[in-house]
Amino acid sequence: MKSNIKPAEGKLGILIPGLGAVATTLIAGVEAVKKGISQPIGSVSQMGTIRLGKRTENRRPKIKDFVPLANLNDIVFGGWDVFEDNVFESATNAKVLEAGLLNTLKAELEVIKPMKAAFDKNYAKNLTGTYVKEGTRYELAQAVMEDIKNFQAKNNCDRVVLVWCGSTEIYYEASEIHSTLEKFEQALIDDDKRIAPSMIYAYAALKLGVPFANGAPNLTVDIPALIELSKITKTPIAGKDFKTGQTLMKTILAPGLAARALGVNGWFSTNILGNRDGLVLDDPDNFKTKEVSKLGVLEDILRPDENPDLYGDLYHKIRINYYPPHGDNKESWDNIDIFGWLGYKMQIKINFLCRDSILAAPIALDLALFIDMAKRANLSGIQEWLSFYLKSPQTAPGLPAENDIFKQLIKLENTLRHLMGEDLITHLGLDYYEDLVEDVIS
Ligand SMILES: NC(=O)c1ccc[n+]([C@@H]2O[C@H](COP(=O)([O-])OP(=O)(O)OC[C@H]3O[C@@H](n4cnc5c(N)ncnc54)[C@H](O)[C@@H]3O)[C@@H](O)[C@H]2O)c1
Image (cartoon, protein in one colour):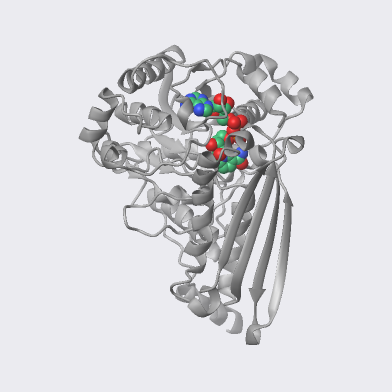
């Protein structure tokens, strides 16, 4: 089989609801790379390599040279926010990147001005932005569709994708109005408050056949109505919550402990952060959304139900504390109580001094590039192979998520090999190992 992915010709528009710390760090980073003053470090699509064929073949191209992704020079950014600041101003306020670097990119960043947001303050009580659209939810969805079409025409984009980088919304669960597309569309007309703002963007995008990825933990596209729409319009979707910082560490470490059959009976995680994300998460209703997204990871990897002797007593606690002096430089602490041979206890302590948006920006880039490619490969609906990037991966209804980052990477790489007509890699090797040994001894 050879690949039948359509080539990445023309410009790709990346439209972002929420031009805050993550989005502006992404945009500034891509502009810096385009100018040749930096490298896209942390972006697997740009810097990562992929093995093809047998180990003896020594084929290991960069992923961007293997699959037809949009070139960074062909990307145009746009977005929405509840604040009117342009991307230069917003990046300056976010204080993730140094002023010197931002000034070098000022011309490119200040021309990107947000469009008015589809917003409902009930979903983020600690936000006081006023740059918002007026109207019922149905009218807001129509307005967002117009924004997308206008942006595409004005910037001469061949294709567009949406990546939600907006604030975490308050905790909500799917209800009757989210259960079918018909009910969802009626609820839009009824201006039903149970439709979250992020769902309005997602609906508008999917209606136009524009791929949508969700970087926050709110449900958004993870409801039957929007999954249904994504299948009707043959549009790929992915979510949810960028896997950065503490959860990244968890999904690296926990599979290792499980692989060695070591027991875990306690994992206490706490964070201090002082950016706007932290301020929004300071509200208990918004924190709950994040907590649920972060909590599932360990249980999914360790599976206490399958191995009660090792993980049956697992006590997992997560705290997020708003602490302004740290800004975007989040600090996380993990105390992990483990036990080994004959039940003897041990402890692991992790103190990760990370930079949240520095870890999130390349994930947002990769999700945008891959979900655009997915559309050109005629894939639609939930793209579980992108769960490598996500804290709380969206799966087909009823299917448990795979949170082990190494299995997620194998799935991502094998999906790319499959799409390009290459052999899948099982790491078995028996088919050629004996030949190699015989070559040496003969
Ligand atoms: N930084 C990370 O490492 C990380 C990791 C995982 C997930 N996330 C999630 O990504 C999202 C963005 O994080 P951030 O650090 O950039 O936060 P941020 O507060 O700096 O930016 C979010 C922006 O979204 C805007 N916004 C809120 N509601 C909106 C709406 N309805 N329409 C348009 N704009 C809206 C806000 O005004 C703000 O400017 C958050 O939900 C966060 O939880 C971030």
